Amino acid sequence: MVGVEQWAEIRRLYRVEGLSIREISRRTGLHRKTLRRALASPQPPQYSRPAGGSKLDPLKDWICDQLAADPRIQSQRLREMATELGYGGGKSIFDDFVREVRPRFLRPRTFQRTVYRPGELIQCDLWEPGEQVPVGHGQRRRGWVVTCEVCWSRVIAGTLIFSKEAPDILWGLSRNLSRLGVLPEKLVWDREAAIAAGGRPTEAFASFCGQLEVGWVILEARDPQAKGVLERSHRFMRTNFERGRVFANHLDFQDRLDTWTDKANDRVHRTIRAVPAQRLIEEKTRMRPLPARMPDVDRRSVVRVPAQPFLRVDRNDYSIDPAFAGRRVEVRVSQTEITAVVLDTGELAARHRRVFAGGLTLTDPAHQTQLERQRAKRRQRHEVEVEIRPLARYDELIPA
Image (cartoon, helix red, strand yellow):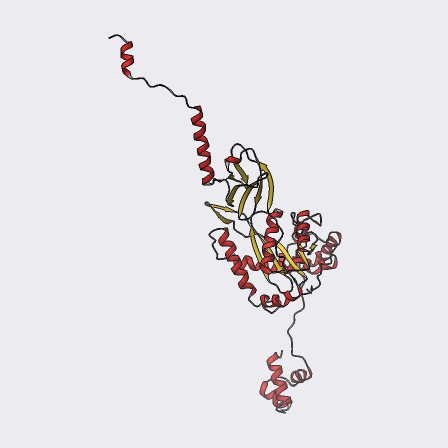
């Protein structure tokens, strides 16, 4: 059989150099009929072998019948059933055939390409770091990062929180919007329990959006493809930000995350082929600025100061001025501090820096001093004066 290289050489000798078939036969040693067939063929010769039979052939119709009955049945289960029927072939040929014929019985989901308008949407979600975050006192704690990405410019921002409750998530969302510096038309969220219940926004989330005058889009359940822009950023954070970094505490984590997002926003984005930070400058002309004051999302509660003047917040006990024992105070818990204000007089009863480690008792030195003073006064009230007599009196009473 004439090979491809020899076929090309024959055609060159005949067409270009103008040699006769007899001369080409003399040079190549090929028969004249072989040369004529090579010259007559416009396509290069191909070696082909008739396909042989496969161990899977007797079961192909049976596989199609099973897929017609249950299009979602796993290939592994089909292979186990086929083995019971005597199939002795390999895994790859079986799975490849199932993958090839399954779309005939189960139409795969398709997606249209989404085009975003400037200033239209910001996608929001929670990303969980692979390792727990150090929070001081030799402890580590599970954390989440509230992530936001502007869909058109692809600028991202993230804020670390330690619970999935509405006040913490909304605080993270507020901080992200402050870093972005603009408001979109709508915020896109999946069905996070603190954000949406049964496909409808929670009261806390609706109140937050109402104060900012932004809309919302609640996605269908189990539909991560609808947040594809942010899901790709999560993969980038997992592989680029988290790997190779050791964090001293949660403040170090947040500081380095802000630095990393700023650096990422100044790079050329692979999808849009532009720098997100520069596109955001253009996009801001079509977006509303932030209000002078962001919504208040701190936790607030009213409690009565107990006889043991301590307040339990997030697994820790914080001291309160014992002078206000028995009186009601309004407690305000933010991400940075905890304050308690007496309701009827407005006096400050406590102010502590919030600690995210657990199982601690945090006492203000002034409160401790006040407790010790009160304890000393109680002791003085219960003390009884006892006369101390000289020993000579006892000697007079006892005869020698």
